[in-house]
Image (cartoon, rainbow, N blue to C red; front, side, top):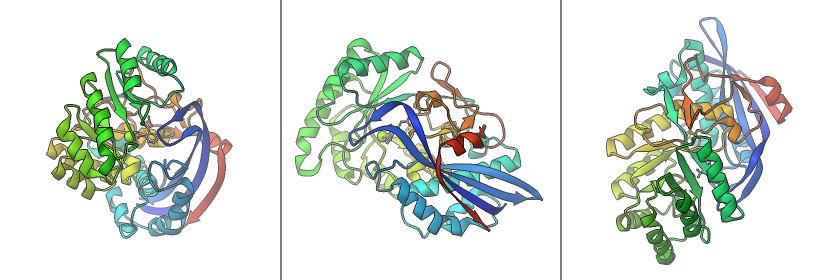
Amino acid sequence: MRVTEIVLHDVELPLVHSFETSSHRKSSLRHLLVEMTGEEDGKTVTGWGEIASPSGPFYASETTSIAWDVARQYLIPTVLGSEWDHPDEVDGYYAKIRGHFFAKAGINMAAWSLWTAARGVPLAQALGGTRESVVAGVSLGIEPTLDELVAQVDKHVAAGYPRVKLKIAPGWDVEPVRAVRATYPDLDVHVDANGAYPGSADAEEAFAVFRELDPFGLTMIEQPFHPRNLLDHARLAEQIETPVCLDESVETLHELRTAVELKAGSILNIKVSRMGGLTVAREAHRIASEAGWPVWCGGMHEFGVGRLANVAISSLPGFSLPSDVSASEKYYARDIISPPVTAEQGVVTVPGVAGLGAEVLPEVVAENETRQERFKA
Ligand code: OSB
Ligand code: MG
């Protein structure tokens, strides 16, 4: 494959329902799309990737604007004009660039999409996927009141989603779980703190909250402490029955190996975006599976392109817990792909067609685009 052109699109889509985490509230999201064109055996093919960094530096230090700059100044020049036999090779071109995993994920995803489209192979199959469908869970943000939260749970349980994740933060933790459990004693529920609890010297108060949550039978507590604070995750995991899951703490395979060694958790949330793409996500799945850690695929409210990459990686055998691959319509009234991702009673069918599995709609991209830049080899 020879990469002949890359177009970077900056696209903002309105959200159907605004979403609040421990750090911020959003009613529309801005992601970057990477349109990569290549030539192979005289054929011209296009692939798409998505840079799903949040716009502000609260989940990770990357922002959309920084991802734009890093992609155009540092990543795209290493890939333009390159020739490769397999998308795994693409990561090597920018291996010297530290961090910027969201930006790298968009490029790596575009390379996989391009290569699988050219070969006529479904993305999931090329990655080693073994499932024809994946179980989807939903992630529910912090709501203004407990009643509104329970109404959100009602809505998604009625739509058939078998797992619900609740965002928690200090002051919004035990009571929302108690309220949801009162109506749904047996539902697969877990909580995600996005690292909002103080650790180190002040960890005792947080430990008390998690000990209080322990008897509610949650499937996991995700990322209770600061991403770099593996030690308190290890201490907590020792003290409670509920499994500890890592998200933000694992940006690289080094951190994954350290976390496994420290027993800083026992479940891994693999985000294609957070870790830098499909190649590294597949490797994280291999390492976690060897360590006996079940994994699931977390989302970043992806538009259709990133959402389809999440569906594809979720078809690998170690993804034994429901993934954040809910239907496009949960977030966007009109997604940028056709057909959109749909869920039937909380189950998403893995596309069996070549490449990503859907077409990107140029008119929807154009309508919602705020800037575009074209790079030619
Ligand atoms: O921690 O999983 C998270 C969205 C933005 C930042 C962090 C997180 C999330 C989600 C998204 O929970 C869930 C989804 O895409 O369905
Ligand atoms: Mg998370």
